[in-house]
Amino acid sequence: MTEREKAWALLNEYVKSERLLKHCLAVEAGMITYAEKYGEDRDRWSAIGLLHDVDYELYPEDHPKSSVEILKKAGYDDQFIESIQGHADAADRVTLEAKVLYAADEMCGFMVACALVRDPKGFDDMKVSSVRKKFKDKAFARAISRENAGQAAEDLGITLDEHIENLIAGMGKREKELNAEGGSLL
Image (cartoon, rainbow, N blue to C red; front, side, top):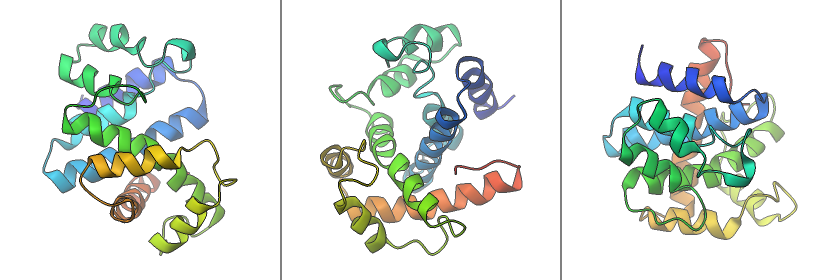
């Protein structure tokens, strides 16, 4: 069993909501995008993206703290767990994994919302300018913190536009891979 398969099985043990599963798939796509960009371990970063909300459905009030025991029991190392803890707003993000997870979590939900309104085109031919236009509309996907998303990109040493461009390409690619397997981010 690959690390990704192990993570997917664990996620499905704790998460039953299709909406939350799709969110985790979207964040996984963001993590894969940056794993490939930075030459990091794709399976590991994929697993971090998938499992970042493993505790959310059962323990929303203690999220992500309650994931520590779940992940330790499943055999994940301290850095993996620390990276997942880093996606909380007040957390210190030391590792690149943690910084990318925070940036992916902040924007991937927004990117999915943008793709859904473009149905059936999804991510195909999506433009940074159209995402930015939606980003300025505070009523669109209002749960997404525009300030946090911008800061998360800056913490990666890139502009928000570069982050959006990376995610359009990576999420579009991952959507095609998932479609071939019978799944979808959308």
